[in-house]
Image (cartoon, rainbow, N blue to C red; front, side, top):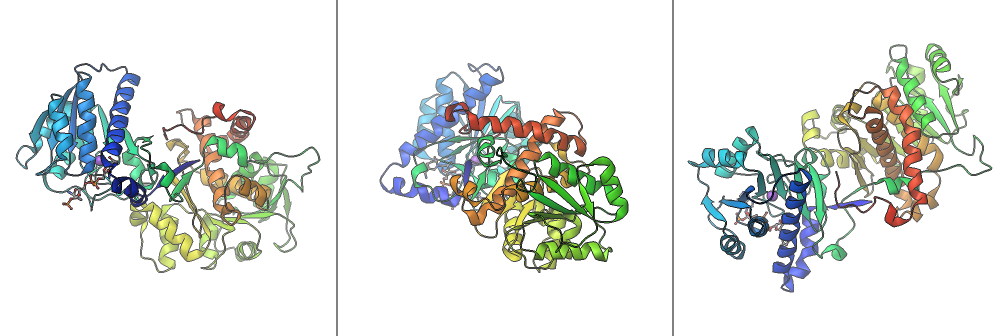
Length: 523
Ligand SMILES: NC(=O)C1=CN([C@@H]2O[C@H](COP(=O)(O)OP(=O)(O)OC[C@H]3O[C@@H](n4cnc5c(N)ncnc54)[C@H](OP(=O)(O)O)[C@@H]3O)[C@@H](O)[C@H]2O)[C@@H](O)CC1
Ligand SMILES: [K+]
């Protein structure tokens, strides 16, 4: 499991070491890690090191200090280094080390910003060390002007020191211009803001450099499940399992206008190992399900007399269908774990429970938040995904899965997951219906298995968020595998799920050192 922290948490963990005079040592570790990551990236790209041009954009604080010391290391390897000082002062020891190593220093002004931006755009590497965890707001003045210009003609390799400058390391929110990084080298622990949109858009590949503060880190602000976690958490049937003991999922979904949503939800659920799917819904949708998924048992009863372990409600539903909407409310009220997708969201009471997993995209989350009195439109949700998902979970007391390039899962208690295992090709009609099916299938199979989560270090009360994150990861990995860089249809995502399940489950038979769980590269 990858843990991520707010910049504030990282600074608190650093404090005892800084108080004991270890600040310079921490900075050397950070700077060495940054320089090493730049060298590795250049080698991976087949670029030469000697004579390579490096521009380090330098702020007045310790982030600039990291950048200057790193550039001094790179100058020592024969690279042509230039520091652009964006403030009146720079970290004195780092600047001295940089100059001793032969680095060139230029001072940024309003007047020379266009020239320096052009120069940086032609460099082999730009290191963005303007602002780190000590930033208050975004880039200002000539630094903002330079980065805006540079964004128009980006360098071959942009490397962010700790965080892309102008990005809030706690929240992933941006203020003013931010340079898109190909690689972010971050110190002491991943920052939460790098693993949530829009921050993740700017961060590129995230590389974590340990600097010796790790033992002092608190409970993470955010976590990300890795394949080895899926291997531990996914169920597998025992020899004497039967379809009922493996979990039965009730599905209330689809409408005459969108019958395919119900089919895809059922296909997602069946692909994700549920023992049985029972469908409750309009006869024409049931007919289509019988043709497409003969494994599904279609009936016409009520929620109360349908014996299941979990419910899936809402995909492709018609809000005007009173009977279906009653099923939605009954399922959410049943006390059983329930995934509530799309059409179910407007029909639910404001306050729910943690075992209810809501699966909005940004627009649906904005509508939900507005209904609950929190004034966020779609744009505001997209600009602050962490805060929006957290607020929705707090207000509804449900588990909230916010779909997007990075999918976030907020528990109403504390835990928070960020999964980014997919491909942009997953943004296709029906993809969300398959995801709802996968979530429902996992709720039905492992929702009551508290021991499974306790053994994995997950508080059983927080398991609903973990289940939603497992589903998001499975679904995204299946999408990436099925797409392989090419267009994708939702049905193929469902088809790819068993293959991904098999692949990650195989990891549980491997020895710890054979798994890919502790990579320091997050993406
Ligand atoms: N502590 C350590 O030993 C270690 C720290 N590490 C590194 O240090 C980084 C944190 O360093 P930091 O605390 O110096 O903050 P950082 O972000 O570099 O500078 C901000 C300074 O700039 C200013 N400023 C603020 N906002 C601004 C704005 N919008 N626009 C313009 N200026 C602005 C503000 O000064 P002020 O204006 O308030 O005088 C503030 O002092 C961290 O990300 C990591 O890279 C690692 O090396 C490990 C060891
Ligand atoms: K930075």
